[in-house]
Image (cartoon, rainbow, N blue to C red; front, side, top):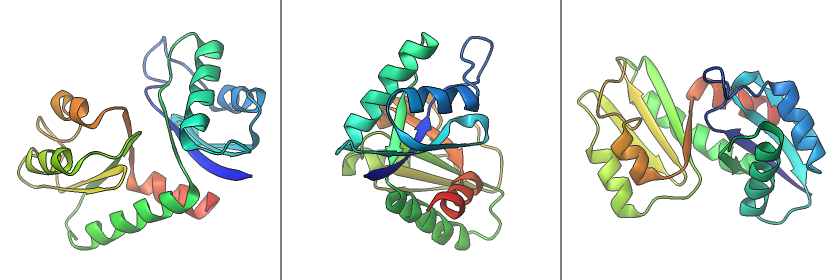
Length: 178
């Protein structure tokens, strides 16, 4: 049995994309996953499965969410050891920037090419440091992001399916589930 932590994108934003964590848990269990747990209401789900690939897990969840909610819910899954590495890399980056006020981590469905990683790193605004590590893009800044950060539409198109959490949430998940 494999464990995964799944991150749901674009839920509980506005009146039409509601997906409370209890409903998420019931839907994931109904799709045949076990040992399901959720953390806060932003779409963070721990699960156990006999499925052998991350893509299979993501596809099964996305199909179940669409059937349950009636709207697509892009889902990005990480093995616990992958998430531990994401958090560790973020801690190292933040330690090099003690003035950091915000630390966002954009989790990607697919690992970007070296060229895309370089373009993402080069396209950020002054005062923002970006580190692409595997399927995660760390963004640390001492101010609120404006246009040109990794959340911009242009960079989102480069990175593909992604969802963003802050480093604090990811660290809490590692402590709780890994």
